[in-house]
Length: 372
Image 1 (tube, rainbow, N blue to C red):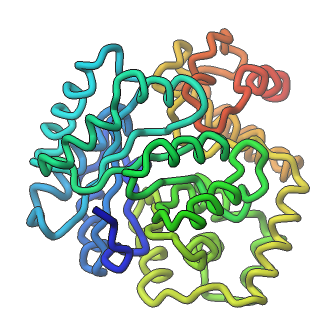
Image 2 (image 1 turned 45 degrees about the vertical axis):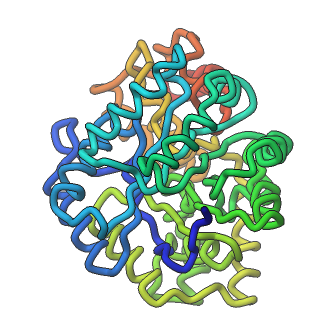
C-alpha cells in the first residue's frame, strides 16, 4: 500500500499550536480556521496524543470530525513511546485516540518521534511495528509511518528493518540543513534516494523563520514586496522533490490566510531565490541562537512550571537585538505567570523529551545569569 502524492495537499494543518482562550483550545476560532482551510481545497490534519496536553485530538473532533463528512478529510495522529509502560498500553492509547477524535480509523498513523535511544527502543520492545500493520489490515489505520528526530545512521537502520513504512515525517527547513543535531539535509537525501514520501514538520522552525529582523526581512521584501517572510521558508521546502505535505502549526486566521495564499497557486523558488535563501541562511547562522522550536514538550512535566520556550525566545531576541528593552519587559511579564529561569532544579525531565536534544539545564543556568 503506497501513498499517492498526487492526492495530498501541499499544505497540512498542524494542530500543535492552536489558539487558546483562558488556557483551553479556542474551538470557535479553530473551527473558522478549519473552514478556511477546507474551502481552499486542502484537507490534511495532523495531531498527536500529547499535543495541547491531550486536548488536540479532542479539538479535531469538535472543529473537524463532527462538522465535516468523514471521507472529506484526512486525519493523522501519533503513538507516543513515553506513554507506554507495557505492551497492552499500545492498544489502550490507540483506543483512547479513536474515542477522543470520535473516528473509526485514522488516515495516517505515526510512531511519534523516533530517535536514538529510548523512543526507538520502546517501539521495538513492544513490537509496535507489527501492531500497526495489523491495525492497517483491519482498516483502523489507512497509512503507516513515523516522525523522526534521530541520526541519519538510525534512519537507515530503521528503514532497512521496516520496508513496510509508507512515509516519514522529518524536521526540514532552510536553517537546519547543516544543523549538526538535526542534520535534516542528510535525512532528506536518505528518504529521497529510497523514494519514500516525506511529510515536513517545522518548515518555519517554530515561527523563527517568519521574522528574521528588519535587515534580513528587507532582503526578502526587496524581491517579493507582497510576500511574507514565512512564505519563503514554505516555498523553499515545497520546492524540494519528494516532499508530499508541509505541516504548518497555524495559531490564527492571519497565518492561515497567508499560508493559503502561498500554496493556492504554488510557485517554486527560482535559482536566484535559492541563492538569496542560502545567503540569508549564512547570515542567520552567524548569530548564535538556541535551537528551540517551541514545541512545548518540555513544559507539561516541568515541576517548576517554567515556560522554557519563552525563556529561550527571550535570550534569542536579546542576542539579535541587545539594546531592545522589550525583551526584558516580555520576560518580566512572563514570570508573573510561570517560573523563572533560576527556578530550574535540573531534574532533566525536559531534556528527556526535547526533540532538538538541547542541553536545557545548562541553557537555563545561562539564561538565569542573564535574566534573573
